[in-house]
Length: 431
Image (tube, rainbow, N blue to C red; front, side, top):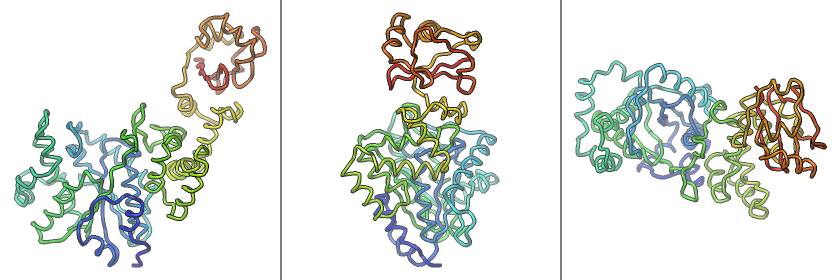
């Protein structure tokens, strides 16, 4: 099969490569290689922290190789000690199945599962562990790896030396992951395992097991862990994880996450998270350096990722939502949004609940903004700002303190959008 590009070179110029086992590059240059990355099924969606590994698999497939996505149905029941200071919650089989289905549907947006010999495949390690008895496991796998070898791993040393210690369950994790590699090598000709740099120890246990058990040869590549320039954790906001599932993180919020990256981070992320080539990225950076205030780099980054994760229509909606909040889009736009999207758009904006009955016969604007809600601390202040022309409801300036509002003014039969000045929004929810 033709190798379309050099996979390792691609990772290298994008700043993604961390460690590579000797001989790996030579193997990849000979022809099609099957390789895998493990995904943790502790939720029914992946989050942006998983995107670097997804991008690794995309580059792998584009270079003519065959990617396997291993979802850890069995290991999800156990937990992974690497880089973590505490043990993970164990999952029931029912929850696990739901999570696996969600992850598969997301991976299908990025990888081609139907393109001939290098079609992506998804495998679940529960399939080969469910009938593997403990006695058989320690006899067939455990005897090949010494405790000394396992204890030497940083992920183990750090936990054993810490306050919480480490359970036998977690200690055995590297054997379980090592067997995954052995199983895929033996049954699917997987010669390569890829993962984040914190997985190096577990991956190498797999190559060692293949060598000791069957005298075979297997290889490893790890990628850089994504860090933010200011040292804070990538992929987290005050509201928690940024998920790939629109129900968990709205496309608007997803778009905003990328749009709000710093200039320094945007230069790193555009290499890692987009498929733009080097010439395109160099051009975008040059334009950005001339006029950084236009945030051209962030816009290109946010657009590319939002479209690939959520599609063109949701990207357009995210743009309109952004423009709406900056006063460039009329109120009619909100009628295109469903309830969840409206609440996502106004997340963090002060909101007030009122009884819909108050609007049936009409309510005076001053009462609405200073009694039924606390948009203004007093009626006097509400009147003063209305007379000064600085108050709007549903994008219309309030001309007089006698103005009335009724049910017919509600957006989506539920919302009124109040503004004090241009930028202070308040969401009034009538139920």
